[in-house]
Structures are given as C-alpha cells and as structure tokens.
Length: 339
Image (tube, rainbow, N blue to C red; front, side):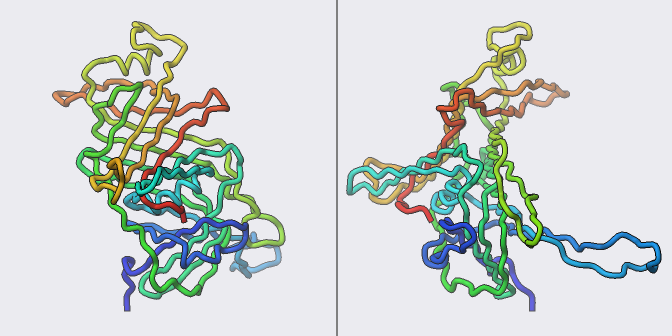
C-alpha cells in the first residue's frame, strides 16, 4: 500500500528547555499546512581507506554523526507564521488594544545573541508510515515571494539537533486555518513611494553553523548563528531612470559615479481580504516588514529587441546604528498566544 504525502502533518511548538521536547507540543503546538518539504537526515557511512595488507574490497563501515535539515514550503498564514518568525527573529512583543477589539499585534525584532530560540517539531509522514519528533530545531532561513497575480508563498529552512522515530502521532492537530494572502493585497514602498512592483521577494538568512560535531556524541553540540543577511527583491518596469541613478551612481541627481550610496526605508506590507472578526476599528490579518535603511544594488537596464524594459532590483538591508534593529516584522491577527 502506498502512502500519500497529503495524509501527513507537521506541528510546531516553541521549546523552552534545550534538549527537552516541548511537553505540550500535541496540545499547544500549531499545525502548519505545507505545500511540500520536510527535514532530511544528514549522515555519512564512514568507510576506511584502503590498507596495505588488506583486500581489494571494503572491509567494514560505520555510521557517523547526524543532523537534520530541510525546507518547508507553505502559504503564509498568520498563526503558524508567528511561530516561525518568533524562532527566526528571536524576540517578540505582543500588544492588545482595549476590549472588545479582538486584534492582536505581534512585533518581532531580530536578536543580536548568536543563540536562536528553539522549536520542537512533530512530522507525521504519510498515513502512518513514520512519525518523527525533532528537538532543538532552529530557523536558519526564511523566504517570502509573491507575484501580482498569485499567492504569497513562503519557504522556511530549519536545522535540528535530534530526531526520534516511532513517536506517537497527535490524533487531531490544531491547524492554522487563517486566510491566505494574494498579490493584489501586497505593496512594496521605498523611500515613502509605492513601487510599481510586478513581484517581490524577501530573504532572511541566519547563517547557522551546522558542523559542530563533538567527540563521543552522535549529535550537534551547538547551532550558532553567524552574520545575519537580509535582502529583498523587486521586479519593476521603470518609468524613469531615478532608481538606476541612485543604485549605480549613488544619488538620484548624479550624472556620474560617486562613492556614497543612498540609504532609504523599504516597507513590505501584506494583508488578507478577510477582516479580523469583531475588530474595531476594522482590521485585517496582515504582515508588514519595515526595513529602516536599505540600499539598492547597482544594476543595468539591459534592453533587448522590442521587449518592454523590466528590471529585477536587489535591495540590501543595512544597520549602521546598533541601537536600531535592521528590520522588524509586525503581524496583526486575532491570536493572542504564539505557539
């Protein structure tokens, strides 16, 4: 009998104690609906070199140390996304306005500490093929993208220290069934002006080191985050050369190259068509990502035949002032507690 991938489930839960699976994963965790993906085992079969006096065949082999990593591809919904952002950024503050308003605002800020928050994960594969519990998982990468006539999609790259097979699966996962977002409700603003964007992408990379294997153990000793990278991409059809001059020459008014790059705020906003029930004033499920200072990387127009000119802008987030975070992410929903 075959096993359909769609029969499985994935549950995420913030983990309080290193090395200890979240005890309430089944009851307090959030089920994330996935388009595809899962964590894979990274393990080698250790084969000895050929020896003088030995035969022509491999005499023996042992199994080496292990780690687990992979990508989850999904349509971002604000409940499960909040759990991923909490793990990817590290810090979250939640505010709730006066009742009876049901709107909750979660503001996520990247931490400077190299130790990221941990997740416990349950993966139920197929219709009972296998059930894994993962302990000490971290969010290494987070990617969003959307086209004007498409859905907002996300990809999350995770690394976990430990996997246990044969776990008891959660019978009835609590799924995140909040609404999805489409391109007609996504905007990209640069320096206070909405860009005529055909598509956008956002990438956060924590650059977690996943090679800290230690003598006497099968598992990673630590998952340390290195230099953080934050980039955005926008596809536009330019109506003037202002952005090109700013990116390539350094200033909008420049007519030749200079050495100082212009740094401006970039804000990506995404929201649903659906209103948060009982919100007053009316509010929508939404995610906004304000980046206080960013630089557009130099690019060329690249004319070709009778094609309409179109450029893919790559925008680099920078942080010259340690007192100001490189970015924040703000979720608005009706979920008060993040899993």
